[in-house]
Length: 69
Image (cartoon, rainbow, N blue to C red):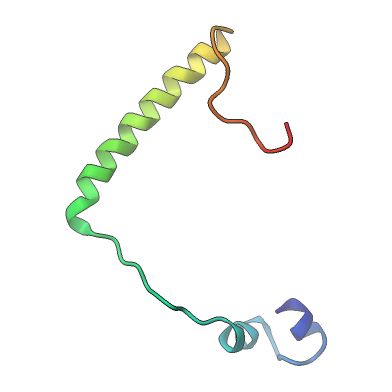
């Protein structure tokens, strides 16, 4: 899209995106599941925080590493 704008094919990024992007499906959240997902998220955050404490103490390795490290 940037190249198309730079080459003068499109006047700006908005017109380029309107010409080139199409949506096959649209997903909408299920509000009935929000509380379930939120509980799981809160549990995961607690687990991750506790796991980081173990990493800081040198008792275990981190659960996540950036690619290339």
